[in-house]
Image (cartoon, rainbow, N blue to C red; front, side, top):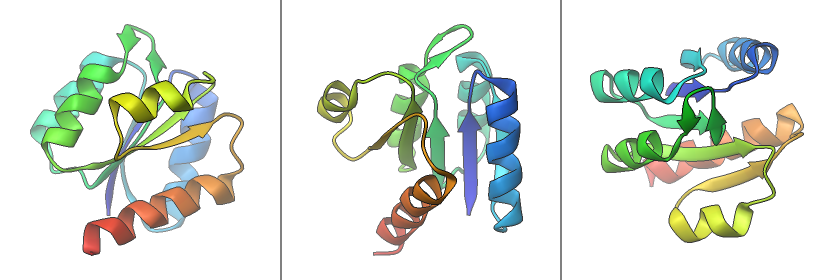
Length: 118
């Protein structure tokens, strides 16, 4: 599974990337700008993405749109209390509000994978 990771907090991004790699996931990132996320999303086939909403150069929505167009599963991983608003914009997305236990994030990724195979 190829997962794109976008996180503006470097340490959080590195920890998540290591955890995903430990589970055998092919990780793209972590990236901390929308520009980088868009570049990777356009260039590579991505199965799923874990996206922080606020990145260093703006909100991740343009990248989320691109990922949905390419049929990737999207998990928003955000400190914002915006689950309702995000679900209205992206009904197929999962929304997790930080702090998220690693096990919960991995479960969301597993659910995304299962929905891809069905």
